[in-house]
Amino acid sequence: MTDELIRLSAVAAVEKLRRREISPLELLEAAAARIQATDGALNALPILCLERAREQARQIMANPPSEPGPGWLAGLPITVKDLNPVAGVRCTYGSPIYAQHVPERSDAMVERLEARGAVVMGKSNTPEFGAGASTFNEVFGRTHNPWNLGRSVAGSSGGSAAALACGQVWLATGSDLGGSLRTPASFNGVVGLRPTPGRVPHAPTTMPWNSLSVNGPMARSVADTALLLDAMAGAHPEYPLSIAAPDTPFLDAARAPVVPPRLAFTPDLGLFPVDREVAELCLQAVTRLAGQGTRVEQACPDLGGAMDCFQTLRAALFAAGHLQHYREHRDLLKPEVVWNIEKGFAQNGADIAAAEVYRGELYWRMLAFLGQHGLLACPTALVPPFPVEWRYVEEVDGQKFATYLDWIAITAVFSLTGCPALSVPVGLTASGLPVGLQLIAPPRQEAALLAAAAALEQLLDFPARLPVDPRPGG
Image (cartoon, rainbow, N blue to C red; front, side, top):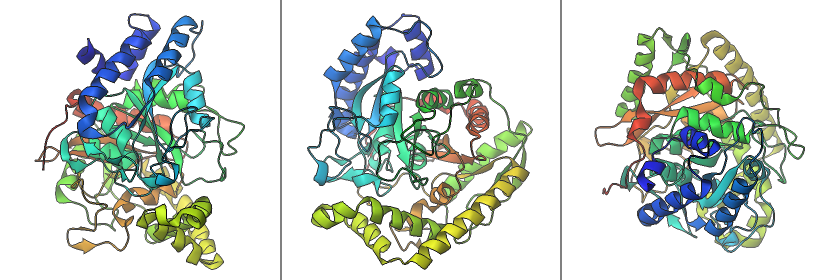
């Protein structure tokens, strides 16, 4: 039964769990068997907590709610990114500083997921403190792409994305500062949604007003992603930015695909070098929507200066968030993290003030643009999956990048806007590597975004390719 169970969608698995056609323990053992068979090649889930998960599963089976609401996962096994604490389970943040750390309390998002019937069975690999868009660290090593084991899974939610693509789990959490949900989704052929800040709680934290970094869902389909968002979403007293869940579940939107009446498409935002094959696959996907009646216009908002703004605000965030790590353990931090912290220290008040003013201008500019065009579509990543040994992409099409962050600019600039952004797989390159299309909607319009993504997914039927067995490659 293992192969049959891992191929179920999350939505289908939860429906079977609710009807008691299968049990949480059956799914858990199927997932454990799949992990044992595949993770030696992937290194996607280096931390497992199977006994804890089995006890959770038994409790859910013994005490199911009489009237489960939206987002009830009914004992479905999931994985949590190793940046989010799970009580009693090792949490390293991908850093040698925390190599043996075991937290007493879970992150508020994890608490909510478990209260809504999720069974946490493991932690997914991530770069140190989520810094850098390729998943490797000094604690667990590199995570390999199941489509080609010689390729990167991107980051920082790379372990989650690889685990989903390979069928190790049905749902996975991620987080996104500059593209950490979206870029791994593109590289692994899954769906990743960066929600509006406040949609998913994150607590406790020393920086509760941070609106650049968010938690969000990843899955093998748009509907599965919506299901996990329903399980995550809602107001939380410890998270001052949090917003109430909508009256209508997000899953309803994903189950009622809507071909968007209009959208803007740009292959490069007018700013960045994009691999030609990536741009062509994204254009083909948008053309499919045009064939269904979407009015597509080649246009993009003015984003000149956005990456400089992002770099400034990210550096200030790193300096504040990692001050103690830098003072006490600088020698244990990877060079990119040290650089980011020191960049934050070197900035002055005028730098940060200018970045905050620009961010406000960009917000109003995006609102006006999306008010005219409805949605914006562009490639999720500048390139297809690159060799797993690379720390980051240093150049594209002859254009060299100044920092380790520049190659994710096509996602990072939208983190400034507060707009929900989703990556949906749209095809494979000639060498069989996944490519994702990024869709951006106005703030708090996740439902419309999911409905449009579901319509595109129907046209392309990419989830039928998943899960994949790990494929050797050079």
